[in-house]
Image (cartoon, rainbow, N blue to C red; front, side):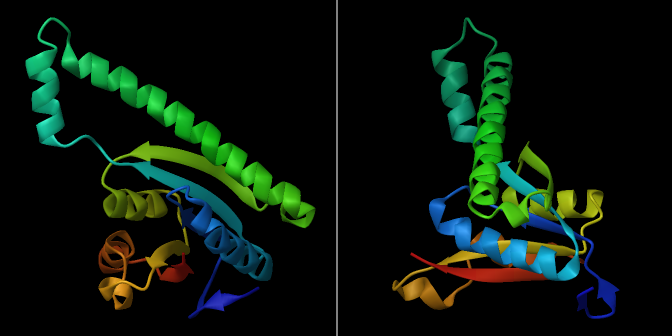
Length: 166
């Protein structure tokens, strides 16, 4: 069993934004899970609407209960993302049948990305968080992505940041 420091890795939280560019990060998480005999929990976080959008909805939809409309819309969005994440997981595992069973749970939540990733990792007893960060040729290419950076700053659980080149 592989170990990170002195602690065995039994549960890996893999956080994804669902982009195709994140598939190598998922493969990386799969390889760690195989080496560690660990399970993977896949997580996607949907960011909440900002206050400007909420005000606009209230102004242009006064006859409707905007909160209910938003709540219903968020439920639909969460259900759609859950289906996409399940399909993503199934596609990846179909390509490599030996990987079946490594993903124990697929979850979509609403919230601020970094805070939600850390909270879910703590709740699920994760031993490692795996996230990707976009790397491009832009001036910010030497900077860690904001979500990945915030996860590393907030987490008490070890975080593995995998660079993704687009």
